[in-house]
Amino acid sequence: MKERYDVIIVGTGVAGLNCALHLPKNKNALVICKQAPDKCDSYLAQGGICRLQSEEDFAPYFEDTMRAGHYENNPAAVECMIRGSVGVIDGLVKLGVDFARNADGTLAATREGGHSGNRICFHADCTGKEITAKLFESVSLLKNVEIVPDTAMLDLVVSEGVCLGVVARCPDGQIRTVFADYTVLACGGIGGIFEKSTNFRLLTGDGVAVCLKHGVAVDNVNYIQIHPTTLYSEKAGRSFLISESVRGEGAVLLDKNFMRFTDELQPRDVVTAEILKQMKKDETPFVWLDMRTVPEEELKTHFPTIVKRCAEEGINVFKECVPVVPAQHYFMGGIRSDLNGRTTMPRLYAVGETCCNGVHGANRLASNSLLESILFAERAATDIAKNYSSADRGEFEKAVRGLDMREYADVAALAEKYKNMLLKAIEEAENVKPRN
Image 1 (spheres, one colour):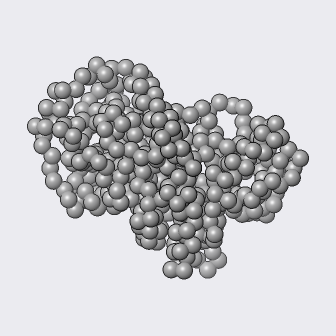
Image 2 (tube, helix red, strand yellow):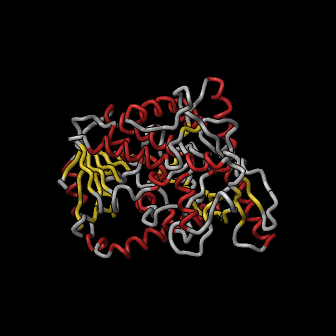
Image 3 (cartoon, helix red, strand yellow):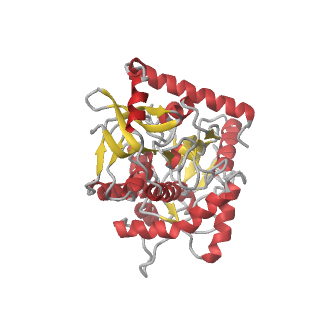
């Protein structure tokens, strides 16, 4: 790593990568990630990515998103996302993303809970992996972008309320300060602070924590989504997601007596509540998901990853039901950002799951996450380019002199400090305004 970059991006999910991809080619960017670049939740996204199907679909899509978010969404952000969805999908197709197609060559569309129609583009049951891999491939070819794995952001470098770079732990263990005119936080969710989560364990909300530390505004940090259906297992580690698309294609939820007990295509928080209520009534640690209602060939072609993982657990989805249980899944709150990714701190942007721009409200509608992350990351890159100005290197050096580097000597202790800070903020927010 060099000592200075034009832009630093923290995170290699779809938000961080798409931001890097759309920066001007005459601007040098550093993209860092805690571990390997593919250890991000973007790679885990199964269901797909939404696309406005027609002008007639706008009102239903808008209403579906608002209703799922309990009407706490920012309407301007929702409209911006929906209107931009066609351009996002067209851009991904140009990058080589292999979306499923109909017989006539048009993009296929599936449906998930909370949607009033089919508007989700997909690649089997690993859409996130397909999109992220293609974005990573494109960014890797850029001469102005340097991707450095195994590098953790430990703090922001701040002078007089302005962000001027980051403090990072490098692959060799050294703690370094890196100057940048602009810093973009795209560091994902907070699942790593929970015992049961679909997220990678390394995603611990570091971006939100450092913003709390420096007084950068955050919103709705207690708005945390629980996914209704993850594979029940007594094994430790990340919970395996059973995509909502399976229910969108006809799978049903059953109680201990194998009786259907709810409408599976309601918004996620509603389905989760119904499952938890049924588990309590049945005194069981899971409910059953019956995928046998989906044609066998459809299961094989649309959901091969799920079929394989269940088989590894000794479950034949073609002949028996799958035990499922809710688990923490997505963070709707985060660092406050506007429609261009700007935070309340000058020269600091936030995009993707780590930010809160109001799109999701109190509960995310299925398959809006990849779309939201990609679209607003591009808008952030465009905003940086349009308003670019160089920061004061002298202010950076002054800020570095004011840092107590001993604070970063014990990375594990610092991580625990950030975790506790975030958990406290979540508890306080829940006391002030519980998630409805």
